[in-house]
Length: 349
Image (cartoon, rainbow, N blue to C red; front, side):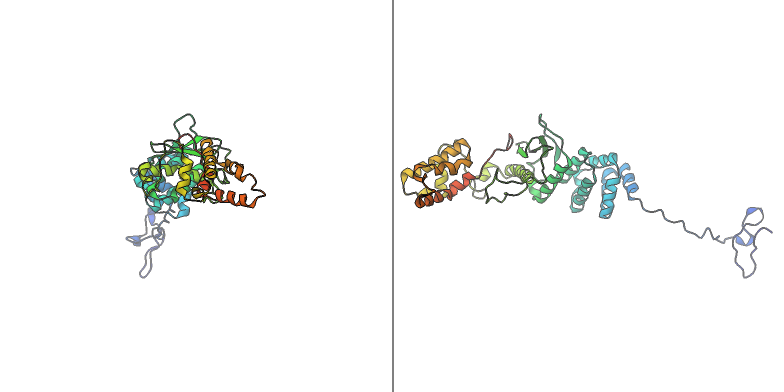
């Protein structure tokens, strides 16, 4: 006989009968092997994301799938996708596909996982996050971005109000140009341009007095970060109405002068400090003359030296009365305002 037969009270083990079939009692019975459920294939998020990216849902579906993954898995997928799929994902995503905190967080993980050599993809991640065109300037000084510069820009921009960046209709592009120093400019067509060179230490360079005095909140702060905020600020200025807004009380009551003539006297009078009420008319005229000369020469660092050389202050080192006079002048708000050096950055700032 071929195999076991079913007997009363027995059980059929499903062995083959004659000719290779199941035993006579095996009709309707399950075999031991048939009772085993095949093990489920482990989830492969990289394959799933890739299939979605290549499918009809495209980049939007792939990105949505990535948002459902744990943070560590998101990083792994973004890292192991490969250069070509990363390019396709970043290029085909639309701004509406990525908005919201979960989308913004995933964009940053994609950025961090993208190698520094994939500059176009890094620019696209940044552009998607802040709704900007991120590229080089279109003139002859244009230079490709690098990951360190884009990373610092990202950190600065995400700390600013959305109304100043992604929701600012007067800001359309973030560009880079070649420069031996950290600087920038902004233009009326919505461009904020940042200049720096490969030798500039943008992560560690801090302001030590070239543009600030000791009381300035920016003293000791990162120059690159301050430059990015400054150029974005130009486009914020444009978004609120520019000079027209700045002339209002809410905008600071700024005044526009067609000429530097008489600027020192106006500063002195507006400050209401000790120079404005100086008792000796001749001395007051001389003091204002020094301030005006410094304004004309654009050399505010010379204020103290020129003031100390005035005839009625020339013995301040040994004469207590003259020293007190000089201190009063130097502590005047008009003088303090001029001592904070103002420097035009780049060509369009």
